[in-house]
Amino acid sequence: MIVEQSNEQSTVSKERVQQLDSKGRSYATGKRKNAIARVWIKPGSGKINVNGRPQEQYFARDALRARIGQPFVAASREGQYDVLCTVVGGGLSGQAGAIRHGISKALELYEPELHAILKQHGLLTRDPRVVERKMYGHYKSRRRFQFSKR
Image (cartoon, rainbow, N blue to C red; front, side, top):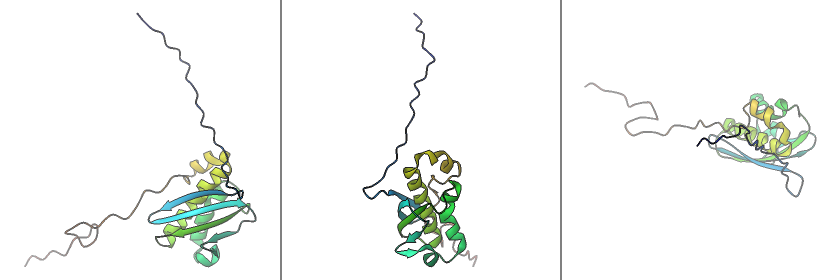
């Protein structure tokens, strides 16, 4: 007995919904290396505060400030959102990457239609690269102790 199956595929579309807290903000967590950033965004004039200080004061290098602004540039939303974030762990570069990841996720939660754009630019994916552990018999993770023949 042969049973025929229909070729109709059930299209289950994952509908994305705007997620806001009681103050009208969107919250997300971003990570990079050992840095963890908690990020809140809300409509505003484009101010970015990191650990209670303006981004210009916290990140002295222009490259780090540019990295933080990448999600807004990719989504064409420069100067439309205020960002409040707290970041712990890691160095300045890792912290900037964590904030960028958190802003991207929070922006997607605030405007779900931006998911495709942010995903295309690779801003929603966490960078999995972390420092390799030190192994025994090695000076660091890969560097071995100096060999002495005699």
